[in-house]
Length: 109
Image (cartoon, rainbow, N blue to C red; front, side, top):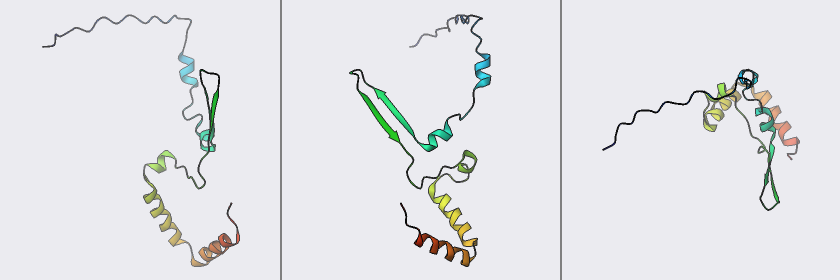
């Protein structure tokens, strides 16, 4: 059987008054680095033996990033593709044919 232990008194805040962190909280910017991460980034890991492991992360070709408000309505690839196909169907046939012709003429990298 467990004994009911009363919560011990928590020690009072010991942070010195000269360490004012209030301005740091105000200066914080949410999502500060998200644009840079979308472009790709490099990770460097330094090992104890002095060697470095460098890994480059780049977005895959054709990667599309959805903003959080859009992601709420389109949680997966299938829903996004279905919505876009619906929009494509609304484009007049002449514009679709011109678009397909342009894609055939331009070689992909």
